Image 1: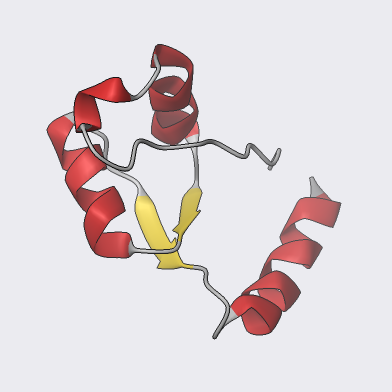
Image 2 (image 1 turned 60 degrees about the vertical axis):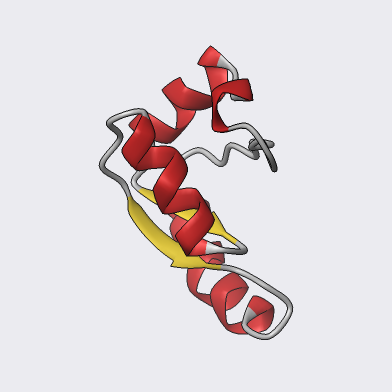
Length: 73
């Protein structure tokens, strides 16, 4: 699983780029700070992806879960 880091729009959901939409559509898992905001973005563009929160309160745990998956490819 390759890692892609994508900036998503804060205000207008239509400001997202085509490249970001492609990356999100191809992702196995989407990590985001606010799953409610990101779900709205994905729903608006017809993308079904598994969302997981990633923020300062769970950063260590999520990183520990993700590193082995990234290392495995």
